[in-house]
Length: 80
Image (cartoon, rainbow, N blue to C red; front, side):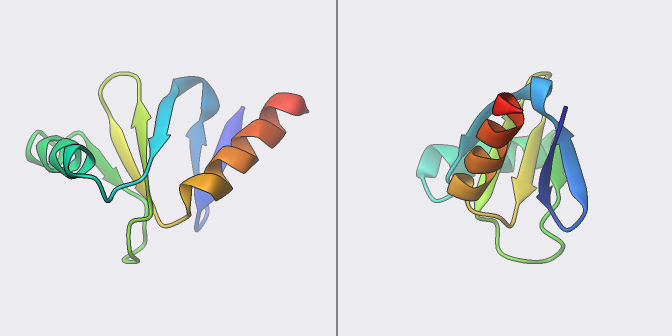
């Protein structure tokens, strides 16, 4: 199953380990490290990053949607 993370971008729900807020210092370090190592996928379409998705395989995805919105969509997918 897939999760819409905004602006026509989707992620495989089986690969998602966590959805976190990007404002904490550890999250910022994780994003910078992923960018340096070319493991970062920016799906914000130039907008402010509001959620960071951590995927298995050490990939990081940035989204412009709120973590609450993404987790709500994720839960809807699990139920249906």
